[in-house]
Length: 132
Image 1 (cartoon, helix red, strand yellow):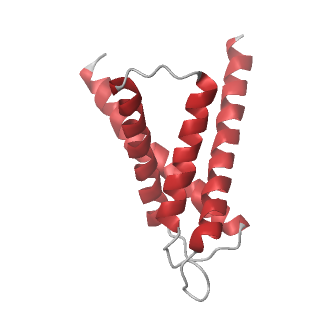
Image 2: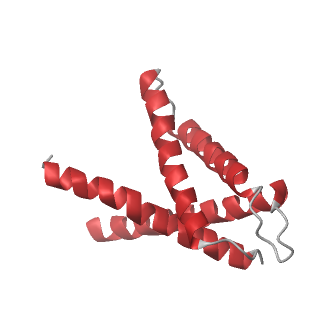
């Protein structure tokens, strides 16, 4: 791979993906009537998700684990929900500036993840239509 393209792909990974995560977190917060989630918190959460995925992938590679696709997806979803819940549970994000709590944090991260998965499915479907 061309070194310039490698740099471009890394820059895109660490800017575009967190921006998309931030947008989905903001939209999820709006749909769940949660006030106080900032773009910065969403962007930071996106960076955490990228790093979490990289660490998870490194662990799988390092242990030479060849997981079935369904199990790999399930593990990734559990990691996403866990990290999202841990990140947002103590954020002061409601109108009384109280912590969000476990229940609302898992709703927020779950809804954002569901919207992200739906978007991914739509994009893959559109690409399959145009490629074939």
